[in-house]
Length: 92
Image (cartoon, rainbow, N blue to C red; front, side, top):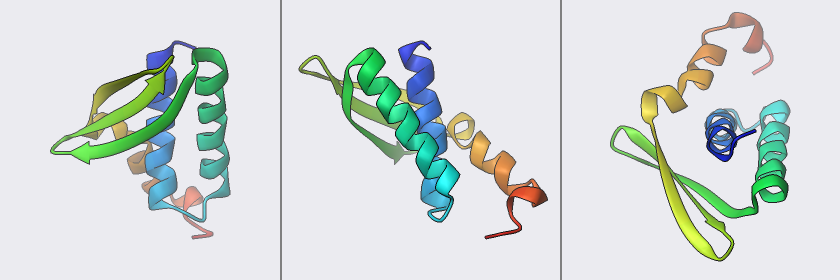
């Protein structure tokens, strides 16, 4: 998986997990993408910050710090899709 895609997937599921902290599947998926980013792309210290209408993902890679931004609406789409689907909201 391309690094940018892995970062975006991590961001989307991290948003879900923060909105649904009891969602064990979301937590496990965040950890999966963190492991993938570390092992495949040498990405560490990954963090996200929402500012205005965008999410900024900061991370370290090979001793350098980088930031990539994604549109807020796009980043929050997975959470929106999950919350709008009744079968995913029965246990919460």
